[in-house]
Length: 165
Image 1: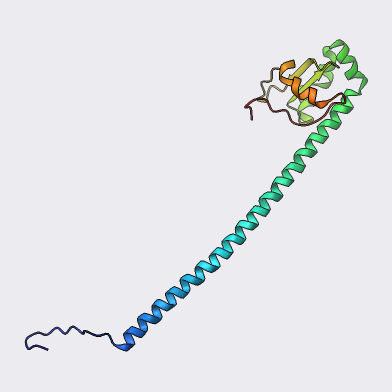
Image 2: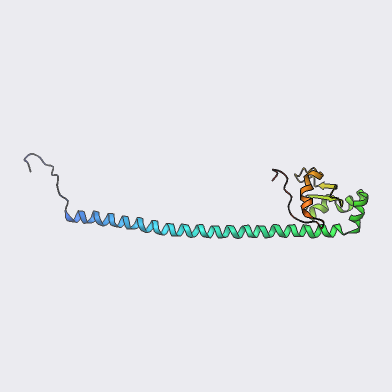
């Protein structure tokens, strides 16, 4: 040390200080490693669980949708075989519409839209509830491809029109 200089700058670290720094860095590296390993395992587990639940939800929605389509198909077969409906197709008498297709009746059946076709698959009558946002123009062209694919015994399913949701 020089005389007159009161500040002392140590040039070497003590062994204790080196040990504390080394242990601190080792613990930090160990904690980071444990965090990375465990978080990747946990995250991949959660991702797998979420994917499995999403697949189950899609299956559940598909089954519910299929059930609704099957119910509509059964109702349409019942109505198609009904004498009043057969007579309506022949005459298009509006009494049938007032008696069977009133807005309240359609709403109770959870129908927004109903359409009747003859045996040549020509549209004869259609109705949509005023409260629904459907604006459907029933034409042979719009349904011809779907009706042709249904075959002679009919069919069931969902009809998508162009870009409409």
